Amino acid sequence: MNLKRPLRTSILAKTTIFIALFSLIPLFLVTLTFIVIHREFLWQSLGILIIFTIALLSVAYGFARHLTRPIRALMRGAERIAQGDFSTVVDIQTYDELHDLANAFNAMSEDLRHYREVRVDEVLAEKVKTEGIIYTSEDGIVLTDENGHVQLINPKAKTLLELEEDKEALTGRPIWSFVKHDKLAIAIRDSVEGDSPKIIREVNLSAEGVRRYYSISVSLINAPEGSGTNYWFVVQIRNITAEKELDQLKDDFLQSLTHDLRSPMTAVRGYLQVLGEEMAGPLNDEQKKMIRIMENASTKLLHIVSNLLDSAKMSAGKLKLNIAECNLRQILPNTVEIFHTEAAKKKITLTLDMPEQMNPMNLDSQLLERVIINLIGNAIKFTPDGGFITVKFIELSDRVQGQVTDTGNGMPPEFLNRIFKKFEQASGTRGGTGLGLSICKFVVDAHYGEISVRSKQGEGTTFSFTIPKGLQQNERGEVFRVRSSAANAA
Image (tube, rainbow, N blue to C red; front, side):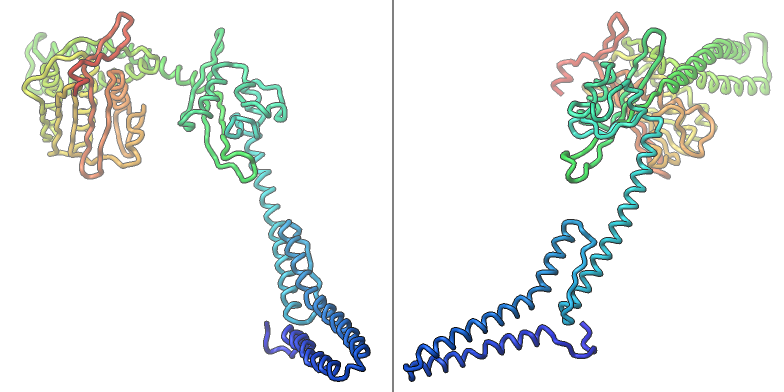
């Protein structure tokens, strides 16, 4: 309120007049006293008193209505605002504080109306953009409530799920009850009802020489208030047939290529060994040096070829284990010995730490050697000159635990989550195929073991893995684990 403007009739003045009317009460007392004293004027006095009282009450009632009319108008306007009618305008011409309040109210109503129009335009624009993205997406998108009932479905999803019904016909029942293919329906239901909705499920619908693969992924979002559900599921359906076929072509190509390369490389290494042992004639020192260089290069090349071939076999499901009893005490020293020459060139101290006695256990010794070779090879590759590499094995009651620790540069934290994926290499890395660690994980997992990594930049890296005891293999080549009583007791 602006106190500097000219004085106007205010609420205080009106209240003062109202109080002044009540100040006539003493007149009523005087009149009553007069009646008591002069009883001969009783009826005349009472008539005058009644007429005066009625007139006074009428004036007070009219004044009260005049005083409260702006307040009631403001209340009705506030109720209409609360109901969403932002076009409400309150017309109060009292020229007092209530008039100022009405003007402020009208200004607020105008601001709210303008804000709603702006927000509605923004919401409509976002809705149009969202619908444009959803309905033109090459992926099938289905929005359901917590019970799987369809809230939104784009044309691509209807095509992939082979649905002929419209959205209204899909209401009332879960989306998977309309899907014709049982595998696809089960995958959608498991994605929505499962405990881990973020898992991507792949469904193979290939039949009669026609390959068809789908992937199902689900995201959980909070539902808006008033929607009748606590949350919504966004089901994304993709046709990944082309990707699967491309992966299969790559795997077939790698398998064919590496298989054709392995035989001549094995022959080259055999002839180099014959030359190195001087079985084909004496060699001078320079020739021996060149033979050793070629042997090392051929060993690395054969290792790369083996990784490529094993990766192709892994993808095709053809890399099988050959479980047999073996003694790690005999295998490990020979495997580590392979790298002593390479470690000596970089002045790296390579140490094997293992018990004096180790019990025989069932495993695939050749694949275990591949794991150790890959881990030590990586450690030598990323450890600077003069560093240390320790290969440590511990035998426990139910498993054997292995570790390869180096004093290299370590790896960035963001790379640790994907280090065991195929073709993954840390930024700045040169050489290699990025397959060694994925093969290590495959071999360890196939042995029902676990593999992990700890690394800190500037402080080195430690790869740890475990191989359980009690592995057996049946006639079909399936590997299973038999827990011994000693292991159960432990």
